[in-house]
Amino acid sequence: LAAAPTAGGPAVYLTSFNYGVLAKGEAPFQLNYHAKAYGSADPRFWTPVLDAKQLPLEIQPRIDGNELVLQVLWNGKPLGEAEVTITREGADDVKGTTEKRSGSFRTEIPAGAFCSIRVKHVEKQSGEQDGKAYSEARHYSTLSLKMPAEVAVKQVAALPHPVTSFGAAIVGDDVYVYGGHLGSPHHYSTEGQSDHFLRLNLKNSAEGW
Image (cartoon, rainbow, N blue to C red; front, side, top):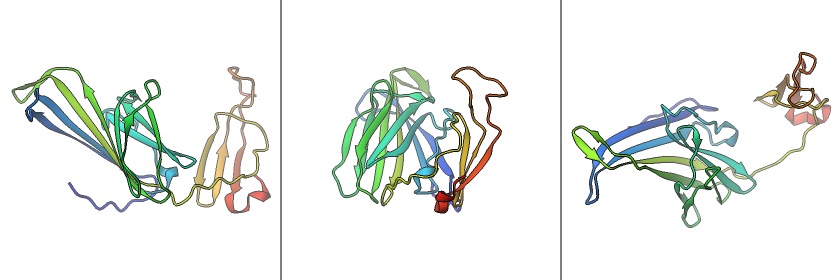
């Protein structure tokens, strides 16, 4: 299956395929492959799918300093002790398992390098497909990424008032913030909600909101 997507920005592409029941000298197993790709190499656009019907085994990446952090989800929930294999450009392969509770895995990837990620999950359940019985279902999920050339952190002007649970978006060179909670934790009222719609130009953040 090949495609030439034209969309950029926050586009996410995904697919899943069931290969049926295989044996290969072992006990018969059902084989399933899942894949995801992003329309942009910008980590800001690495958004999760969070749809178990479309992508039951999902690899969700983020950048933390010079590390790539992966969150592996199975049916929308963190998957612990899943096998992870990462092929890194300019470095040795990395193999390991996700953290038992959080389903996360982290490793260093050289700046600007490509990496190919594969996660394996085995369902210990028997079943039958096309008249063939199997004793387990194997799932593989893949994701390929290019690391940013550099990770830059820029301090910008603080919000004019403290607020939590607000909505925010970046459009062009501007960041927009709307609403949010002003009151005490776990106490909600109309007076405790911000009605401000703010904009900050990221190139001239010194000018403030």
